[in-house]
Image (cartoon, rainbow, N blue to C red):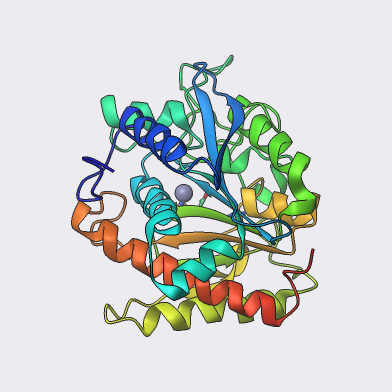
Length: 311
Ligand code: 0X9
Ligand code: ZN
């Protein structure tokens, strides 16, 4: 569609306009879903793409962190490919899964990162005890919330977990929405940047591993191998959040795994490895998106092989 060429980063307004065009251009296979309302009362929107009945479901949460613009650019690029590509591999990927995609979850923070502070990460709900604004939404899910120092209790911190779990309307809304369709969701992917990592549970502890950790690593390896084999030669590492990165509690992928029994659940940290970091130049939108497409395709093939896509 017009003026949405993935050659620059789009504002929320542009993304929503594009989404409207997509929804009206592909009425048979797309459907809008409403996740809920943000603190500033914006509507958090998602798109379901479904070509047939009884497909396994893949949920993609994107831009929970405001400044991670590459995530919504990649999510919208994927949506466009699923609907318009004539490539056989992409057609099969698109048509043999049901896609639930939320391009921008943290809508308030995203707008703020465009209009006021490019490096904004958190939500925009004020604190009752501090003049600092916002909570780290990826520490606010109701799963091992605040445990093991995996989030800060300090409202000014970038990883502030909030006054209580689900204090952020955006997190309460997505939790309720995913819970309402969890029987249809086989795979949960949370898009982040940066570092080039596939992170599986657990985030809240390094003392234990999930029961299917070997499978989670095998599936992540399939993604990493497929991306590395592309001409860009980009390397992704993988492992649990706590082992690869740091203890982080109350994140999307732990919540989906622990509380919704979604056995395949990752945080994907896109490009790069720090040269540009969060301010990834727009020239990398398409390369990053191509990698995500090939990686997700390989990831789902491996899930299929290991029996995770049964309904
Ligand atoms: O710290 C985070 O929330 C993520 N990294 S980022 O640089 N995008 O902020 C990692 C999240 C890991 N996942 C869990 N906390 N479960
Ligand atoms: Zn992030």
